[in-house]
Image 1 (cartoon, helix red, strand yellow):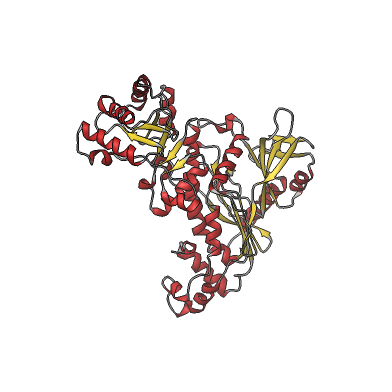
Image 2 (cartoon, rainbow, N blue to C red; image 1 turned 135 degrees about the horizontal axis):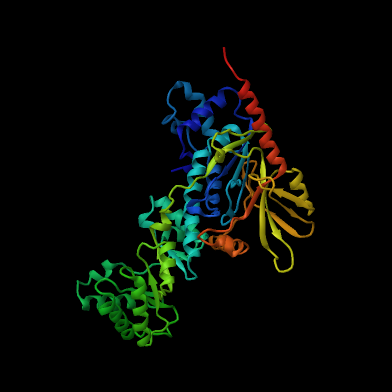
Length: 494
């Protein structure tokens, strides 16, 4: 299935109007951004731009008969022929996968003929809203602990596509691994897994059957990491004892170089992990790791660690794979410029008021002794405006809080460096993006995260990082609104 056409029909009904009125080639600029981060988060994690590029470049790869399935009739015949050859010819700017993004910042900017940019709205939002929901949740879960977290949610995901790309997003945002094999094959990373209760019960519901299951598993996976699931019948009275017995019989001890451990999947994980740890240590298996699963999320993991749980790593399923607490991410795709003129959608709901014009976000990095490489603020400018020129020249500049213009911060010349968040990924319809492996994207996220202060990284009541817009962008926005308000006040019909 060509997901470039995973769209809504109204994108194409509008497209027909653009086509027949001669407006299809007017250059438009659309921004994708979100307004509020989920779960009172301070920020979100960018994931999905690789698939966005693939989606954009696949436009025009269907025959006219394909379009007749949803645009039937002679009146659409000419338009169908046009769509079958309509390739993307514009420019796209996007944040890197693994970038940390704040509300209202352009995550993706599409600059292209109007019809080409308009029909991309739905598939691009479909891709980015899914992956950013999963990535942002994964970042929260992983920040709840210093221990590794594995993503185990494919069986709960909303379909195979969601399982595969959700696993990718989870790894970018901090997960150590995923059980999803398609993600592993596609991205060249190892998938991970242990065993299910059915493996144990397939040997019959008996204590000796559990022992036989463990021994067979160990013997058939020598030279690999060995994790035994010990809660099928009774964790403390037989499960951990059978695991110890099986490890001993098969010669697995602390000298085993590939790692070994047990998994807990039910019960009081804090209590059981403490007791299991004591039993393992008493039998000389001090390097035997304790892996825990069972409907975990960042709150349960934080609470387990507060209770002194002796857990070495976690497996998290539906909480990450479905972004269970906030399954719908709020990216929107809005027209911000047409034929060189900044535009916006006016709204009585203040939060829905958008920033007009072709924009670029600068991340300001403190460059003073003791604070080197600390991120200080983000400022979104109209490309090439007065603040943008000062930043790129390293001059002193001041930014103001949009909601309270009395709040401001001045950056003196020499006290900062900067980088831009939106990078060219498509130019004149050609892919110009830099290629990064999945592990490189993960490393980029981890490095970016460490440049924010600990108070900005915390899960509960994070300190809010300074995110502003330039004076020129603010004035452009207010100017359009003032003119609109005057026109609306004077408007009447006979």
